[in-house]
Image 1 (tube, rainbow, N blue to C red):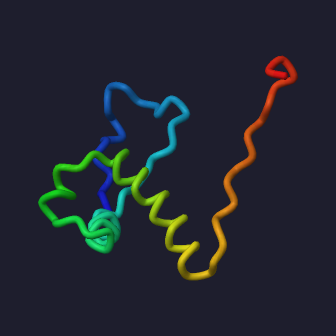
Image 2: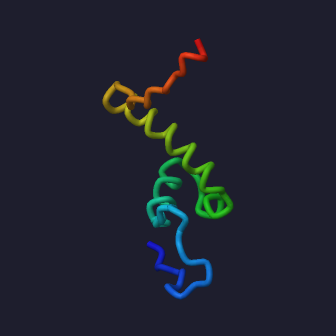
Amino acid sequence: MLPEKKRDSHAGEGDGGQKRVILDFAWILFVALELGYREKEVACMYYGKWCDLFEQYKKMHNIRMRRATFEEPKKVVSLLDL
C-alpha cells in the first residue's frame, strides 16, 4: 500500500480524469513466488509483464481446479469490419 505522494498544493493540480491506483507489492510478490519466480527476478520484472503472466495463471488455475475457463470479455465489432 503506497501513501499519497502528491501534495494538495502541487503546481500541476488536477488528475486530468485519471484514477489513482494503489499497488499491493506484497500481493505482487506472493503471486510471482507462486509462479516460481525468485524475489530478485520479480524486482527486475516490469509490472506489465507480471500482469500478463497473472492473466495466464488465472486461466490455467481455473482449468486445473474447476475444469472451466474465465469468461473473456466480448469484443465490440464494427459493421465496417464485416
